[in-house]
Length: 105
Length: 105
DNA sequence: AACAAATACTTCGTGATACGATGTATTACA
DNA sequence: TGTAATACATCGTATCACGAAGTATTTGTT
Image (cartoon, rainbow over the protein chains, first blue to last red):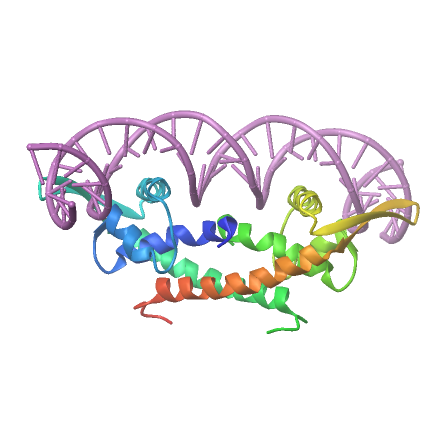
């Protein structure tokens, strides 16, 4: 998938991945894999960004003697998903414009 | 609209804008306006990029004593639109993932 | 016991790119 | 006369996905 097209989707995918249950980095990557692939460096950059903008909170917990950082979505994060739903309408209209008069629908 | 979300759409929008008829910068911006807004600096950067990657060709023509650069889509450009149609399927599946278990569909 | 693979997080540098700001020049209109 | 519209161009900046490389532990295999 085109890297530019991913840009607008990754943040919201990560938020969706932790929406129903707190999760941690490694698990998020595996959960998203069937849907969209992203590297660790990409994910941790995104998580940091989402934390800084108040979309999620972090809590460290030990699991089998190994550190895990669990991410929890905030109200802001939930609102971001809502915004995405609104943006989606614009995306659809852009798609229609691009495909207008295309032969193979 | 979120700037990141635009990134994957702008190139293909510009290609779509010149697909059925050769066009020039200022007209492209006006034609795209109802669908997606972009500044002149953005557009000319995109046109340059699309030219460099063989998606379109340029021809200069005089119109009312003013120079105009007309852009013409190539086979590569048409193929890019086709690719976008394929990518679209992935985008749809990502949207479904994000909206999964959302309350307001 | 030794080694590989999986788990888990972190940092650095790079390339791509949308955009505001700014500039140049001509035509149309009030 | 002056302002808006038309038309193209360049520069610098901020954002961001990613590969590469690193650290450290646990689990599975031979």
